[in-house]
Image (cartoon, rainbow over all chains, first blue to last red; front, side, top):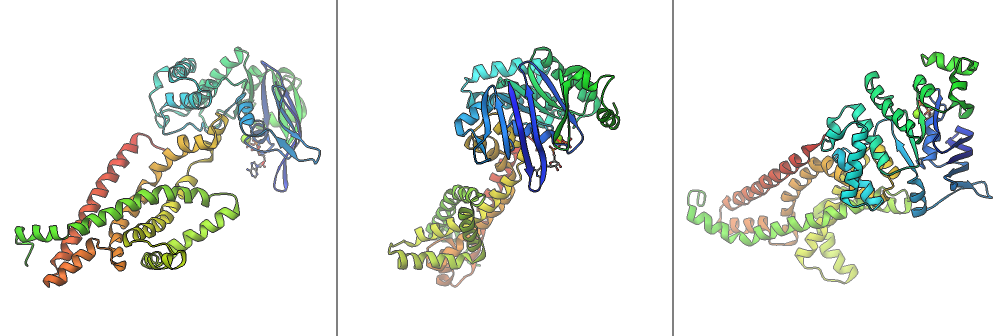
Length: 251
Length: 221
Ligand SMILES: Nc1ncnc2c1ncn2[C@@H]1O[C@H](COP(=O)(O)OP(=O)(O)OP(=O)(O)O)[C@@H](O)[C@H]1O
Ligand SMILES: [Mg+2]
């Protein structure tokens, strides 16, 4: 479904991804954990074409987003083909990034109409169904500024789902939220996991990673240090590195 | 006092200044019509990552904001016919000079507005598959409008008063008409009539902008 091969990325002098390879299969929920600055967000952003990589390869559904040419430089898909490929990816940001000037409903319908060419009626129907799913059917005509953080994040999830992505990515979707609101967002993600959606979740919520993810990837210093079934990586026999990290993360 | 205590004389005075008022309104509206879209284009060019585009545009903005509008009026009215050989009538020269000048101010206001939009808005647009043009018109621009209303209203109020500069190249706008009446009748009252007209125009501008501000009050950001 998604494959990153030996991805390297640096900002100026500092290497942030130093050869990261990750594979995500259909229906899998992958949690990415690691200390602050270990490169989790950068990896997710590279997969969503929000950052360009220096070298390596990223394939989405078998199609190459980027490969490395003979001269060692990355070769990206272009223009329309690129946008069409990226539609297979959905992204939920830490700070929601809802469009403040549009109602919740319009936040959900705009791209469906503009990008997917759906009719207004079709887009609205889809939007209402997804709002219902995230428990916000009654907020369709509200503006984002009148919602709580947890509600905003659930709207953002619904907005991403409206585009029918094959893979949904989350970058610390709950770290701007207090514990109670965190739970309402996590339960939505849990529900999506039960529906066999393919998801990649960067998170600091260890319990969530262990309970919901099929696989956990632990990153350190721009490298994948551990990658395995959640029960193994975070279970009773976890490694010293994970113990040290999880100790700090209050797990 | 000759006019302000004599309504009949006052009406006559006003009607003799009517053409000037119309010309002032023409300069005002046409300047806005041209300079606002032009300002938006200039702002976008100024933000280009290509130095070869942004550098000359920066120079243009520097010149427009860094020299007197009065001088620019002269330059457009006298220099363009001289170097380009095409003849501009006084009114066209005025509107061209004003539009070029005000576009530079609007451009900087719009640029500030666009830079204040969080990068997350662009990223959200991108991951939803919007093209850059769609993101600009559906996501960025509507939010920029709300953010620039106040500084734009300042410029528009200044423009009302700046129209009087056109009298320097003998455009018969309101201020020139008032001056003529004043010297013809040896009274300063026509100048006060002009002053009240500028004030009235700016009263309308203020009302329009507070209406627009209220219209954009439906969300906070
Ligand atoms: N746009 C950027 N410019 C320069 N350096 C950056 C940029 N984005 C990230 N970095 C650096 O790259 C490194 C990895 O950042 P990244 O955001 O991927 O970490 P992270 O694992 O997501 O951390 P956190 O848990 O704090 O979100 C950090 O040292 C960061 O300072
Ligand atoms: Mg991060």
